[in-house]
Image (cartoon, rainbow, N blue to C red):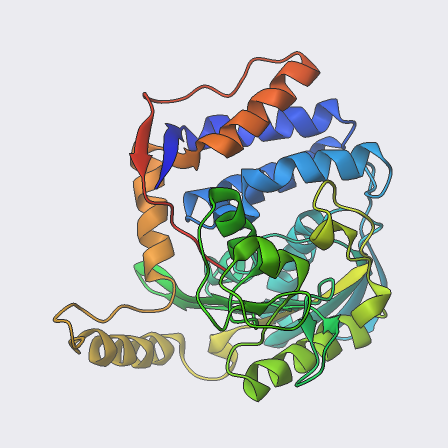
Amino acid sequence: MVGVERVDPGALRQWIAGVLKRTGVSELQADSIADALSQADSRGIHTHGAEMLPRYVAGFEQGYLNVRAEPHVVGGRGAASRWDGDRGLGHFVCDIVTRHLAGAAREHGVAVAAVRNSNHFGMAARYPMQLADQGLIGFTTTNTPPVMPALDSARAVIGNNPLAWAFPRRGASPIVLDMAISAAARGKVRLAASEGKPIPLGWAVDAAGNPTQDAAEALKGWLLPVGGAKGYGLGVVNELLAAALSGARVLSEISDRTIVVGDLHDDWGVGHFLLAIDPEALLPLEEYHTRTEAIVRLLTSQRRLDGGSVTLPGDPEAHAQTISETSGISLPHYVLEAMDQLAHRFDIPRLSRRNTSRTSRRRNAN
């Protein structure tokens, strides 16, 4: 159980952007990051929401992140493009690339982009969801600092390299799959440690390589891949797509200070891979929607063994977002306290709360 308070989504977005601009971040990049963080919090993905802001601010202030980043194209051919993130945060370059991909996919039927010289891009589903909002199928993956060992080895050399897909639906929220390839996102372990909670066996091992339920000890060790060899294989594939294709840093070339110390976001130099598909390039749009809804009806008509209804990937997050938009985003006290410290430091009003404190169970997500 953890104390939370609700904040207005628009106020949160505006407040975060204001802090970043006080740090010297350009208006376009600040607005992009603020929108991404508030969106993640609104969907219950608090590991990629406002909790990240103090680390971003420190990274910008110390020069690890480029406050005046200008992402730009450095290569490509036809419907494929290669971008440089100019050491900005990945939210900014991926927002720009996603807009480019939408137009290119309309023209060519499919479009891909690889990004180098970038950093944390937050909630992976953000970019495929932007494409789904325009009737396109979207995919993205990224490489990250090493947090997992290669299969059956004893040293962390590969990241949890998340991936996300989004499939558009007519008159309904898109079907969204967003997952890290570790058994759990490191952010979940970090949150458990901050709340003094245990983690399930199989999530991580300690520094000596022993299975542990102690979140604090897990942070000194490394995560384990989901599904053993299958998760490890996905991690390798995502590393190849995001880093090998883009020319980004790979594996242990990436600094792990952000992961190990956690006090700031340093210069990662990671890569991202993004894909957009226009379903109408493959079959009539009406047929795509008809076939998609037939799949949805069959899946959601099933009953779980506990008697509940079967849901689609992304449904819990979409439900959380609906609640956030009407009742406000629920943020834990320790996140709000860190934001209050930033407000004091930058001599700006603290983020206003919607109501008085209450206690609620925290939702964790990849």
